Image (cartoon, rainbow, N blue to C red; front, side, top):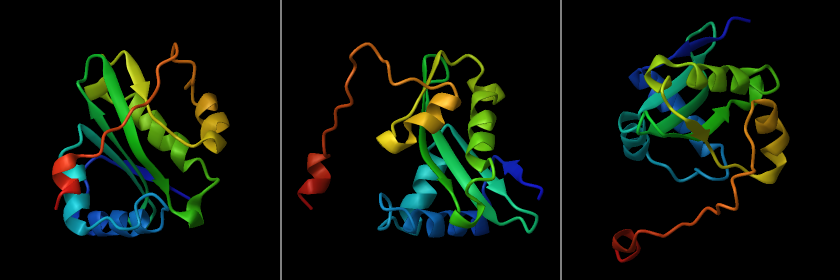
Length: 142
């Protein structure tokens, strides 16, 4: 099978991305408007399409393009898992010219994905740094 990366999503790809999001436990309630906004406001989006130009994999990156690039939403359609799609996505991100000067690529994932990401060169040894989160109080009061 021939899987090709795309760096700009068509409207149909965005609809297919929304369908992929809705199959994930962490993004079942995303709307089309939210999906369009997160794609538009990301520094880089990498989609993988099959022979029929259907979106079968995706990830996006937020970055200052110097120090950090934070990888989000690595998704592969369940019919295509185990075929190297995630590796292709990550390779496209790590070698993309717009991110060539980035010092650190980062992501967060569940522990069951540690081995996969370690094979891609990632480490969870980050000198004691801990992820912290604050829910947006403006959104919480609506």
